Length: 61
Image 1 (tube, rainbow, N blue to C red):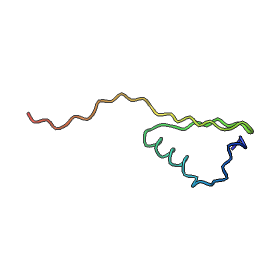
Image 2: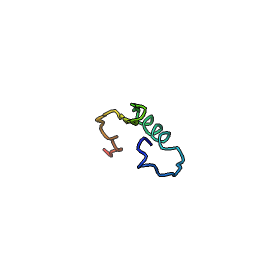
Image 3: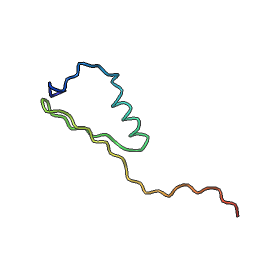
Image 4: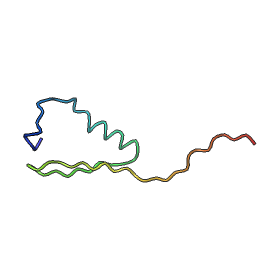
């Protein structure tokens, strides 16, 4: 982490970004990354906006 005060000395599984990528791909979205050494990293998760009609149920005539 860029801020030593926020250091937790805990290790994680490292799966967070991999899982996020799978979710984004499943929704035809994308991840954008902005990173500056000594400042930090920003991740933008972008999902497409789709206004879809719900699937019609089988209707009896």
